[in-house]
Length: 291
Image 1 (cartoon, rainbow, N blue to C red):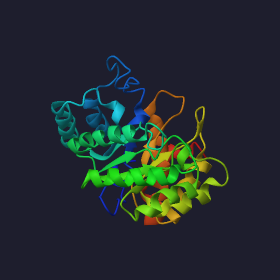
Image 2: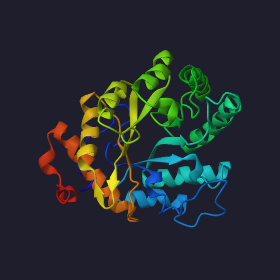
Image 3: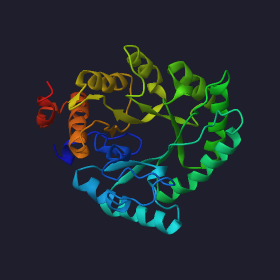
Image 4: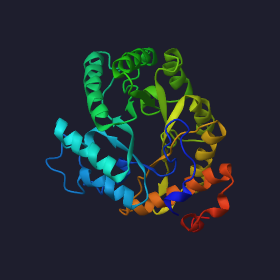
């Protein structure tokens, strides 16, 4: 499969939809680095990641805040230059910490999250993803909605999205309670693998109306991908009108992360090609072994 075969694009950003990857999928490649807890990066340097992605045919990436070994403006400028030089778009800067719904620490957590917005802007991110909250209380969704609205107001032109992830967003009703009052000022990163069970497809369909980017997360059993669930999840949001990119999320046992991503990419591209009428042009060798 070549880059040219990822023919469909996000109608709002032009991002090639199946040539997108969540950098957490390459956690082992990056040496499992965590800013503030890991002394020094031991794997691939983050500055080298854009070129490595381009070599594999990817055009777009999402990066977590903890991937950054430095928040110094000069380092952020280097990383942005590396992205630009490799032709890689930063779809989203993912702020993976912070608890907006904590009864005591919520305001401090909101301030910490807001401080991270400058990094997203410096890197040229199109979006920033903010966790809706971690502590579930009787009014967690209302508290989350209000806090996200304030963060979006501070973000200016940087688009703020949240995700169906963790205890405050257990189901579609939770997501709707958070996002409906915001009337479009905050969007959704829809994750295909955070919810499980037979009801997840209907729940995903309900929240697709908010979605503008996606974590295309697959479930694996050892070396075997759950292709049926993965295809059904992708189809569910496409059928519900989703038109954004699919940031591939690989989290299986095999250390060859790029190989696992290639399997997932072939499946997503196949599903997209059905809608575009170009399925016959694709090399689906990566999925034939799974059928």
